[in-house]
Image 1 (cartoon, one colour):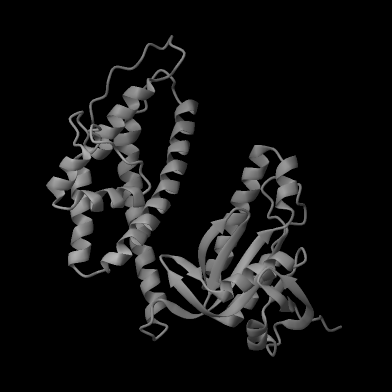
Image 2 (cartoon, one colour; image 1 turned 135 degrees about the vertical axis):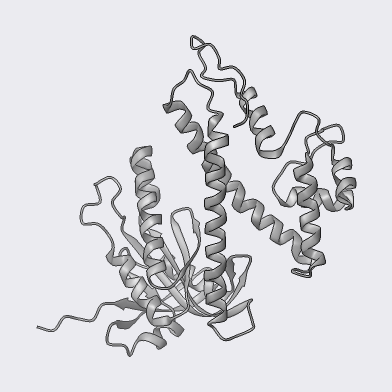
Length: 341
């Protein structure tokens, strides 16, 4: 375990000196021993051009360092070498490098921010007479192992999805794209407490993700109060849309209840790039969600044609709508079949 500085006097107002914690954290996580490298030195040791190193640094989401800032370590040198090796191995085109690094930086930035907030919350609830540096040496390795496992497992799942499609085109494919949106989120957020709002959002994201995975789909991202997902099978996409609108809890006043939602789903060729999806199908699904009634699901004409003859669904044409980019968007409502008495 890393040696830690003496704990502060319990009589002090603060449980620990943030400066000391950051110094030790930098030493433990990045190997920073106080004699860091400046940007010129790091680029020279990595064997890359300074401009390329700076572009990579900005793409990762870090502020640009001045010439006199010795803030880099051997870990930064190794990272530049690793990126250079990926290009040498012809795993990706040099032109794709900035986009790949930017996506990774954005993803890990959000994850790190959330993890640090959890850590600080745990610190304030713990023994305030002790510096929480043991967290670095005991918890961080566990988190690293877990993150590595999750990444490897998702690699296998992603490979399975692509290979089973029987196509070598990994950038575009026919998919059902769906958006699920919390009804009245802005109004609810104004009248709910912070804890209640957090509980609702957590329930919405967790249970939506579970339903998408059960349908054989993939959550692409959460955008504020809505979730974007894809499903390869049209029938599964329709079943998922109904499951989402049906999920609303009977008593929405209970903290952590699943909120009322609306769903829009469209089908067609979608461009997949760096974990995100693009194209007219995505735009149409978003527009369908914006005009769907609370607790209802809407389909575009293509998806409706693929599922309307299945007796598990009741698909009916709805009045056309004029939305951004589409003056007369064709709408189809999706419901359960009528119960026969």
